[in-house]
Amino acid sequence: MTLREQINDDIKTAMKEKNVAKRDALRLLSSAMKQIEVDERKELSDEDIIKIIQKQVKQRNDSMAQYREAGREDLYVIEAAEAAIFETYLPQQLSDEELESALRAIITEVGATSMKEIGKVMGTASKTLGAQADGKRINECAKKILG
Image 1: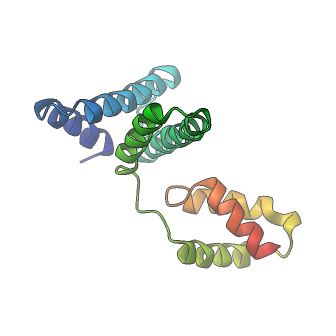
Image 2: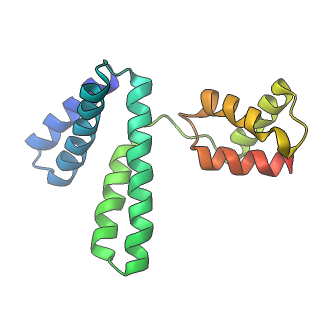
C-alpha cells in the first residue's frame, strides 16, 4: 500500500469514526499533495509525499512557536494536534546517537575535515538521511562534529 492510499484510507476511517480533527488534518495533507501534482504535472512517489509531510510538520511547528509567543494556547493546541497526526506518516526518526554515527560515516566518506566543507556533508546527508532527520538537526550535529 502506498503512502497516498494509506492517507486516503485513514481519511475514510476518520469520517466513519466522526474524528473531525484527524479528518480535517488529513484532508489538508491530501489537498497539499493534489496541489503539487497539479502544479508540477507529475505523479507523487512516497518520497515526494514524505517531503510534503515534513514541510507541513515544519509549518505547524513554526506556527506553534508564534502562537505560544502570542499567548494563543487554543490555536497552539490545534497546530500541535495536526503536527502529531502528520508525524505518524513519517519514517522513524533517528536518535541523536544514530544521527551522529551516520554523520561521522558521511564525513569520512566525503573527506570533510573542517567547517568550510560542511556544504559537501550537508548535500550527502540530506539525500541519505533526509527522511529520518530534519535538515536543522542534521546541520546542528554536523557543526558539532566538524567544529
